Image 1 (cartoon, rainbow, N blue to C red):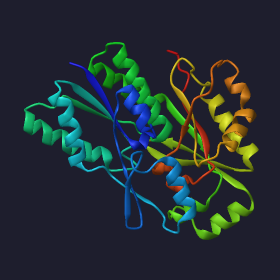
Image 2 (image 1 turned 180 degrees about the vertical axis):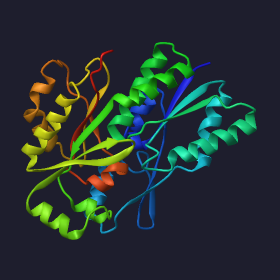
Image 3 (image 1 turned 60 degrees about the horizontal axis):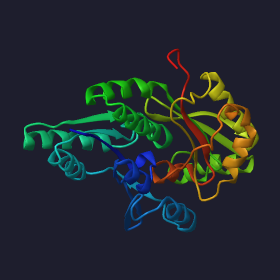
Length: 291
């Protein structure tokens, strides 16, 4: 009996990577006006950011329906396997609730449901590194219950820190006023955000990208540095990487002990809707006494 890992497009894992790793990737729907797309499938991240910039319609994302989960869970059970679903934060979306409804439904149908659900308490990079960590545990031959227990501990030590390049999309999404967005953009204010208890939290504001990059660097230092023995990922939004390249230069001492090419992940619709293009950040496991 194999253990399958399931996640959703809140993780920003690409369809190609999921297929290569054997991950079941469930799409979150993205709507521009009357047109609806499946994130990662008929809506690539590149196309999403093109549309975000070029169209007047502000996009909306919707939770995955219980029926979609049921189909995925049946596929696993019919193969004689079991699965762990790692969800987008329940504090951001109803995806986890839909998954739990589907687990109950499948359990009634099969008389069992060898499916575990883990709330990532995050999105984008933190969800992504938890999925990659789960795959490592499967490779190590751990059983499903042990993997779930470890992931629940691991998520306490996942950290993400990011700088937004513009306040425009927070305004469009109703998160801040038009006046605040206008003044902030005029003053080149860069919000610095993180996740805390499954919710997006404003950590501070910086004037200019260099100061914001310094805040990102300080956040990592305050958490003991990056545990390079575990998964980590640099994240960026939009279809250009020059701001991420600048962040890497500004923070090069953080990566001095890492000899390989730095891994990168393009932010997708779930966070990109509000971050807009030009966001940069880092998701990592903080150093602990066990590291």
